Length: 246
Image 1: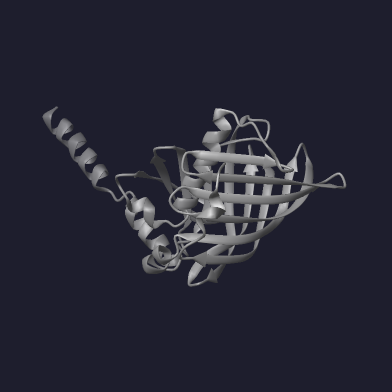
Image 2: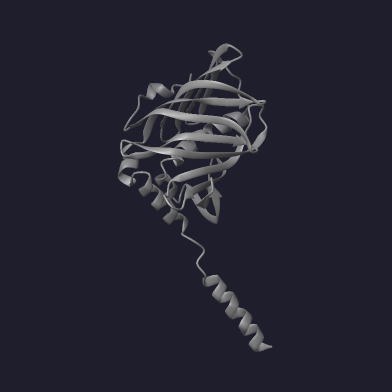
């Protein structure tokens, strides 16, 4: 009996010693290198882009053009001009720390707490896109998860936890080290919780940074948002007036 127990203990010890894949910090460090390196990413804590794409609501796709600006920590502004049923309208969202604002066709929107939290979270996600903030153990907790396939390619998976952020999973292409996808709980336009999955592709260099020029976002497996970046400018600083919230 004792030998049997010893055998079980040995098996457990051997199993525990088996490698479980790269440590989360190592995955992030490799991704930092793949995206341009720590020095370049830290040089540009802000950025501005011009975008085009389409948003799909109730099965109907509406084209849009727009822009996105950000500065870390906590500042994001998105502007969209959407064409729907032969008419054009505009949407502007601004996040500046705890303050948020949204206007539709120039009229301020009333945002419930869930939508306000969602907009604030977009600023945290923008910060995570620079990758090196993830190495701040005082702010982010990283947990390695089993690898998955993204667009048929193996990807390392990390669960990210942080204050002001719902559990978010990041997937890094195992061959290139680039960020391939993100999964989180999102909000639909009608304020329902959805499984939000975003893939990133068509990477190009901008100022030494590798930037995804195409993003596809699904809600509960259905296409919701397609974004094409037509121009991206990494910035060392950006005018604070960009993020004014009255």
